[in-house]
Image (cartoon, rainbow, N blue to C red; front, side, top):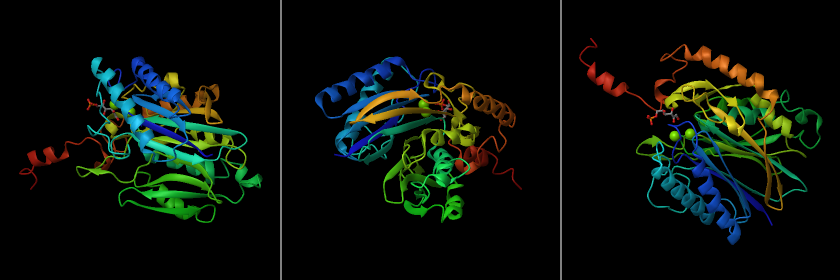
Length: 361
Ligand code: F6R
Ligand code: MG
Ligand code: MG
């Protein structure tokens, strides 16, 4: 019987400011999911955080988009929001865009990555979670893992990977998606996903259709005229035996590549791979962080996690990220530290233009 892995996340209140998560929130989420596990609704779970985002990692048998699972996650977020409100944590309930649940968390604020598959003889998976960035942040590493032979030597020397992979790309502004094959259509793929705020990789499959990776990219959610699916994202990647090895899945993060987000969601910054203990972005509300939790999925049980970036081999990446942060911060309000006008989360431009309208001659 297939197993489903659902990673559902929301920012339901920060401690302190937008920097981290209060331990009482994690404790409450664990308590609630434990009840569901005892009832048999879910098989297993793990609760963690990346910055101010609460991450619920749940295994179950109810398939993708199960309203029962989504409702259960929603209820956890609502209960945890109550804890956040009691503590007056910052932005309590900020990601719950509605008062009432309507069947699926997508479009209601929380982010969600799900995949359903037959568990293999051994099933190593890695769950990634990020803070202070947006879903396009996974484009670069997914391309590296599944299509770049300089990252993934398995594409060259493993006969079970040599055929390449299929990328499902969402055009998030026009609510359309397309599947592209690699290596055949690699240049077309790069032409799209290099614009990572517009074309976002949702899924990666083996050529036989087996799911390999999925992200919390959501189809366009235009609420009040704004695209609101843009949020601190999560991703699930299956590893080994015909898929990239654990080390090939982690290798893209040896470059602190630039992502959008950081302070006020309006800046470029280096993506810093950290342990869960270090996933508390403070400098200028950043720099953006990514954590990686490894599990062996065993009869649906999440054996783990192993904190994959708690490894000295990423020390120099973090060091490099700090150097890049120093450099780009010096630009202050100038691009390219600050995002182009259309992509900033905050803007005063309309008011400024209005105030100055008679001064432009
Ligand atoms: C970025 C983020 C923070 C806030 C910033 C201002 O995603 O969450 O950088 O944007 O701390 O927050 P407010 O407007 O709530 O004071
Ligand atoms: Mg927040
Ligand atoms: Mg966040």
